[in-house]
Structure formats: structure tokens, C-alpha cells
Image 1 (cartoon, helix red, strand yellow):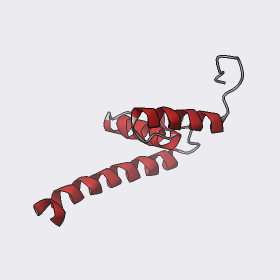
Image 2 (cartoon, helix red, strand yellow):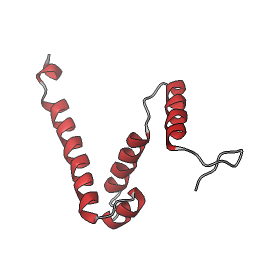
Image 3 (cartoon, one colour):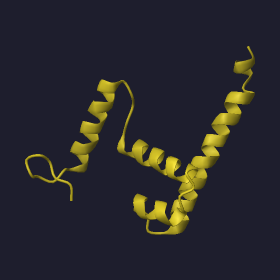
Length: 91
């Protein structure tokens, strides 16, 4: 359990609000889900075993983690292809 400086448990709503506020001050969009997604993508690209990523993300089943990683890789590949092949780039 993570505690605040005053010794109270951090509530998910307060964590999200604090994280969002820090992101705004830094001029970036940041949410807990975005952090989870970014961490999973980084770990998958670093070739960390899916079982380890499963534990870190808190997934009950390995199939969920593999599906999550697969979607990340597919989405990123589509974005790269779109940037390379988009007619807008050729204008």
C-alpha cells in the first residue's frame, strides 16, 4: 500500500488527479492508463518475457497480456505505415 506524506492511503481518484495536474504543468497529457500502456510497450520492445509483463500489469491470465501486447505492436505498426504512406505526407 502506498501512503501519502501524512500517512494516509492514496486513493485512485486522487492519484489520477495529481498525475493529470502534473502533466498539465509539464504541458503533456498523462493518465494512469497511458503510463500503463507506455510501460507495457517499452517492456515488450525491450523483449521482456510476457510472463514478467503479466505480473507487472497485474493481469490474471497470460492470454490477456499477450493480447494487450499484440494490440500495442499492431497499433504502432499501423501508425508507422500511415505516416509513411499517407497522401498528406506527399503534399
